[in-house]
Length: 313
Image 1 (tube, rainbow, N blue to C red):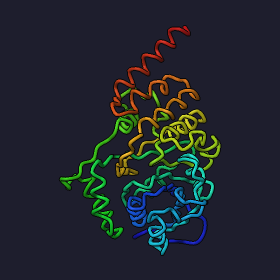
Image 2: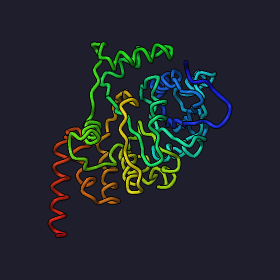
Image 3: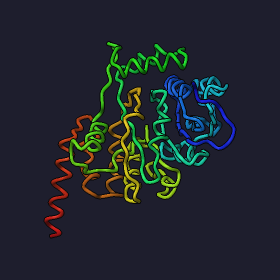
Image 4: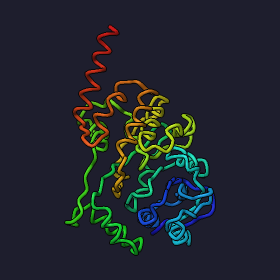
């Protein structure tokens, strides 16, 4: 059964910032239309239209307005708010400010999720933890997006299930270095040198009180891409909020090209280092990059922390 639009205060708010990615957004909303929720759980989806010129929601210059209109007709309990056009941190904060539920899930506009995704986040919700579900990359996403351009929500969910099962030969999923690190630390395969690292903005849930207590996402990262979500995780951890890793809340990222990705990322990583000059942040370049390596990162952080202990002793 798909999630109905119901009266009353929602139990969970899914915050989806979007900026001129209508074909991918359509697939994410199709997955949200297929959610199975336990009674009396209620979901709302707050779509932050961050591509709208003149701060007018829905008027993005691509087909976002058409996608919104399609899913606003009862398929998804959807509310649309105008984005501040000031970067991903600001867009997520705007969505959270306009949401109603006590529990927030931040989901990007290019993620395929299963029908129990929202229920899994809700089941894992605890006052003093944030929840991250594993993400997998789909390098051949462009072809899939084209194939599913006119697919129904049920067809999109079925294709997502096939991808997870590995039955579609021309499409293969893989975990990037960040995801490999989070999973390895959370499951004890490597030392947990960065227990805040699971705050991945594409798929992370937390109580509103925790988000608000630390001031939300740092909007000082601006419109440059990267690190604003991990930085929030570090502040959450320092405030006593712990990471939870839940495989039931998994997602598939529809990978897309960003020609200046690593240049932008380096700018924001530099800012992250200046704000939090600790070993686990200072060595992030060994993990977050085209040649990121989990073991090299963990070894560098461990060695630095050991050296710091020796000096302080």
